[in-house]
Length: 132
Length: 132
DNA sequence: CGGCATCCGTTCCGATACTG
DNA sequence: CAGTATCGGAACGGATGCCG
Image (tube, rainbow over all chains, first blue to last red):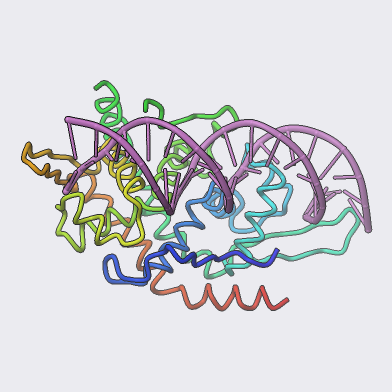
């Protein structure tokens, strides 16, 4: 498993607003995936920033072992989560939000708040749209 | 084209932090897709909230006609964008960010700012991780 | 101009089985 | 306990062609 970013020749290399759209695209690809945000939020809110693998497996319900592993690996790669292995039997591995990871919580909360505030309106709009 | 949400029996029906994880999941699925955010940001920043189809097609470079159509249709369905057809020849269609759509810009900017501020660190973490 | 329909390769991800 | 390996269905998305 080596690759993780793929610039793809079809990606726009220019500016949509003013910032680096590649970076924005990459971030969105990450946080937009099926589990990353939930793992980060669960780690922060349920586990107070630190938890072991099995703990997350229980509290991010619905996630498969496979996807939890992959998600944590990606978060670790991005420096958002740290991984500590305790050489015991049975093995114990703990994951913790890094400072960088914690710094993501603020903008994330902004999004979550927006959902909380505006989800009703979105659902209404969808209902109206679908009824036509 | 009827469906657009699919609850999926495997979705967690519980709380990861404290809010409705289904709504958060649905939003993330939306904004995490390949184009939505870029269309919204381009509409806001390049076109001052209003543009026609061809305008967006040029300024969200790399996007295919198909995906622009689908993306705009979804945004319209969610009430984030309005669509106005001018019965001319050749036809003209204009899209505009709704109030709801504009309200999303704030949390979105929060994310974009985070990327701007922390992308270097993320790249470094990735480089460090990959070198092992 | 602004779509929609179709085809088709790529990617995602859940299920399952296996390991130290 | 904390993974890894493999498989197969489903979803994504680009290219192309057609149409009012």
